[in-house]
Image (cartoon, rainbow over all chains, first blue to last red):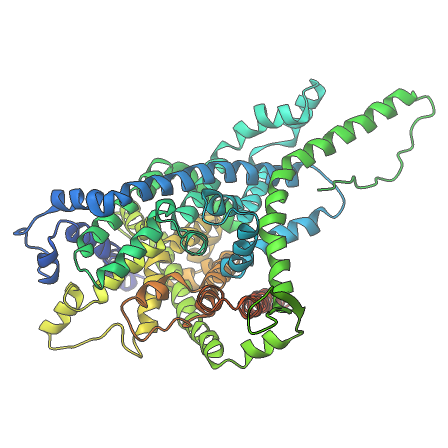
Length: 287
Length: 326
């Protein structure tokens, strides 16, 4: 027993070191490209190509920032506002719609409910690219193609949010509360709006955040729907500028600076709402 | 949206119960169903317009084609062409090679992603990692980077002249072309891995936190070391999460579009029909061949359904085998 005790700490110490080294290397892998983006955003075009990333000789952060918003008549600012509008408004409405539906799936009973829920789950699995052409044809048939609505309406649809909404409703809204409200004579929708929705708050924020990320990431749909550059979100705008950069290298510094700025809103949202999405992940994965 | 009640067996009402009580209960049930319908209506309106109708349209288009009488002049007429578009898609070598490309991509990407994020979650859960919260935040950070920007960052890190990585290799006398014939697919896998590793790690970590501590303590008392506890006790307990993550990774992997689309601006190794999604885009919006694009969409959809169904069946069979062996 005593020999075992004396030999035990050494391999364990070695194990600890290995574990920490592996985790540290993984963190470097995820962080270094972001760090490169931050450093590269402060480079002039020539310094960028000299690949001496750590030298601060040609520091041009302010200049690049100015160029970014001046390029092509201030397109970038417009794209940024578009993205914010698509993402924040879309995620807010989308989350409300999905969570209300998930709540109804949890609290009410009707025939074929589980089959209908199966349809919702199936929708999660269907690739976006499969829907793009028909959506485009529908939009052009109704004259909505190349308008704000062509991008905005499809992104509201979030079947995974319904799934999460149902789970949150099970977890956060006890049936007794609804019974009590009914006995008090409150209407069903009033109860939802005044009582249940408040209890569903953290779940609502989680769904909002998931959808915000998805819409901010959205690339395929705007690419299909929009030809007017004034309606572009940041993702599509940067894609266009990057293809120009292969011909006109002047675009490189602004694409890099534009990328850096486009990362900020989601980091901000995740940092501010951390408390909520962590619980959301648990609900989404454990069940 | 129609909502109907589950017909409960007629309750044996006491003969003395006033008929009005029955009527109010019926009215209450109708009110509830009305509320249920109102809460569900907005979502199902979306489901019909941006999901069911588009899927139906894709299927319809894939069996029809625009017929241009008189050398393409005059009004187009839509005619039924049967499986002609499907034959065209399935005998098109560019489509088949795209399908092969995503199959290979998934074969490399899914195991790396699932094992990598699970391993990191297990390491973080082992309790020996210093600065655990900061490490988690660092690993999660790429999730906040939009896909197109992740692809942009890595494209620059793959571009000679800009990339410090290539420069570093050059100093060690290694020339490496990240966008070459055999490296371009692993390069794309790397972008996806970088973007999603931390997110899936958090999913697994959350699931591991839900494992009852008594179970782990019991394993330790039985003499299991930390590695055995992780692999033989914790991992089987988060199996549901592993299936979920694998499933989502698969569905997203099959849609491969953003990364190759961006890299194609700089690499001749990626053509416009590199993946099935790019094939659909090319067929629909470059060649304007809607029935071909629709047929390719339906094939991709069926491929996705078949594979995810396969995964579900396979895992539930494993579950049953596990239960039987107990």
